[in-house]
Length: 572
Ligand code: ARG
Image 1 (cartoon, rainbow, N blue to C red):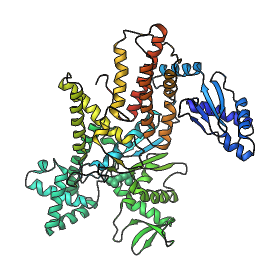
Image 2: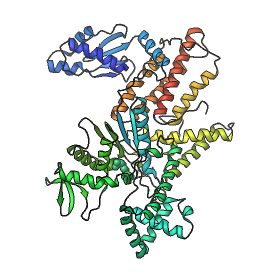
Image 3: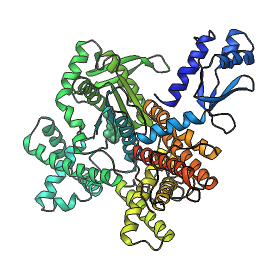
Image 4: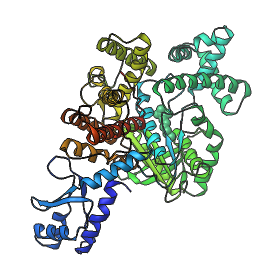
């Protein structure tokens, strides 16, 4: 049980004993020093409903609280807040448990099958910065849920089907006939541009491209082979980016749109049979009363075009069916740009009506905002083009390398290269993950690579500071209890015990910035402790205790950053 859950159980019991069964307790970790470690905020609301005096109700709650061995002191403050000061022996015992556990005493959840649909780029072009957020937010969620023991099934729903692939396969055949296909495919962005020019300029080529779409859809072996060749090269480009980013994604997680091609007609037929989809001038449509426009007309969720063509929505419906029936998904996270929010609302609504999901399964759109340039407009190159993701990552590594070199000229070029990789990639990921995902954010090299403030380099550096402490001690008692006499020690220790609660929040809400904010708080508290409490200049049990606290800090930072997909180094 997490610290908050344990305290909640006690406070709940006290509220119940005072006849407040229906009142929320509103217990939180105190955000400011001097207010205890936890604060109960539910008394005022309860008193209002019961029409009694909040302070005297608070007194009743305090006398009903059974926190022997847990709290040192509980006090009433202001209009009826109750501040809980944890007892040192309780903190010491909990810290000991965390130190002795290889998972920092974080309990596992009852395992569920959780599908995380993330990254999911369109394969017609190379990955660009627009794919960064889905890839790194999705990966962090994958890691956190896995850590809790869930069976996480990553699904990379790549766009590998549709009209563009007719054009691309036609162009691939043409370049192959000219003998330079592999060279042409080295830069997919360029390949796409040239194919598009051919398509726009030569009607015969355009005609062929359209024929190839039809051939692809009907399973023509020759065209399919060309398509496969193109897709596998494009996926190799993606995998190179994933590896550079250190994502968990691999080829086995790829389950692209084409994988559902044979289920599309069956899905539409099922929806028609159920009476959900109806004919609307030749197209098949699901009218959703839940989404009405200004004139009160229900939204039309189109699943088949006049002429028989299928849409993005059809594939997603077939996909939900597959995830329910084959993958037995109990929770599905779609880590996709906020601009697709209406699509997902309509999709989920339809899937529920059609019973393509079980009633107790959760479907969640994990929406995120746009990455902006310093001009506050969506991030672009100087001449307004899209930025290739691989170029952005290389620039991050190169910039980090220059900084590291300047900071520490004695490092070998190998050391610089390693640190540059870890710091550069860490900085890009952390800049994203530390902001609330639903807002847009401005991508700024200087602030994300700064060694001050809420950045990856700052946290990574805090970790190396813990490691440099251990390099200076020959040995120490790894079972020594920590002491919490100094306030800097106590604040750090209490914060370290909140790791599980923070992870629970992330697993539940899917907002990784809560974890980032927490790690930044730990690094800041560690730095205060480091300044206020000498570690190596003291002796005996006090030294052991402070080393243990440093150890718990190091392990929490490392584990926490790992769950965000960020590496640490012992030296940098
Ligand atoms: N390929 C889509 C895009 O780039 C994202 C797919 C997201 N996943 C899904 N199941 N719709 O916009």
